[in-house]
Amino acid sequence: MDLIEKTREFVATFLEGEPSSHDMSHINRVEALCLEIQKEEGGDLLVLQLAALLHDVGVIKEHEEGGDHAVYSADIASEFLSRTGLGKEVIEAVTGCIRTHRFSAGEKPDSLEARILQDADRLDALGAVGIFRAVLSMGALRMLKHTTGMDKGSSKRTVYIEDPIEGFNEYMQYKPFTIPEKLNTDAAKKIAEERLKIMRIYLKALNLEAGIDGQGL
Image 1 (tube, helix red, strand yellow):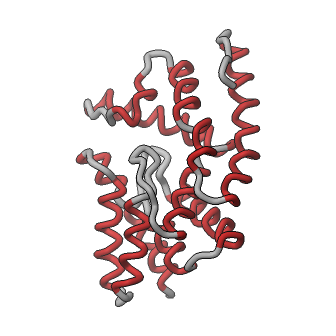
Image 2 (cartoon, rainbow, N blue to C red):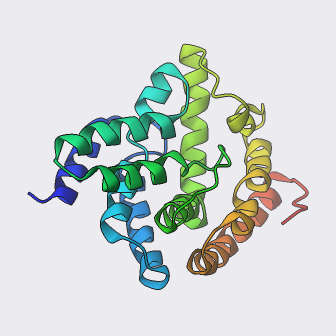
């Protein structure tokens, strides 16, 4: 088994039972988006694939302990990759990508690979999949707070609005509609514009059916 497949298998065991939207299907989509963007933008393919596969491996720890899954993921990735015999320079490049990928942290990536990973992760919050992930995550986080009392904090502020449709509207303004201006690469910006068309159509229909004035679309 090569390194990429070993890494995929390792991540799958960590994310087994992940209750929100950072599951293995998200990992696979981010990896595919990284490869799509890399075809236009360039970058080290090995670093990019490893970073894509490992970028959310610490999310379960965040659910259990709070904190930042990007930091946890980078630490777990470093430990795992060190055991594979991979060179220190490559490991540092991978973990650097992981530490700066998170949307809510507002980190500035300092390598092409890190910029591509950040873009790919943000793109998975857009389009039909983005709508599905948002609703799934909102439900999971609301239930987490109801059952354990754990509040994910200000970065998830729209999750806890009493009316979930109102919360979804605010989420759209706070995250998806702001993503294009925060993307790093031209390739990602083109993908984002196509995916946002779907989200605008859906949000308009949702608000119409719910009797909500859909301003700001």
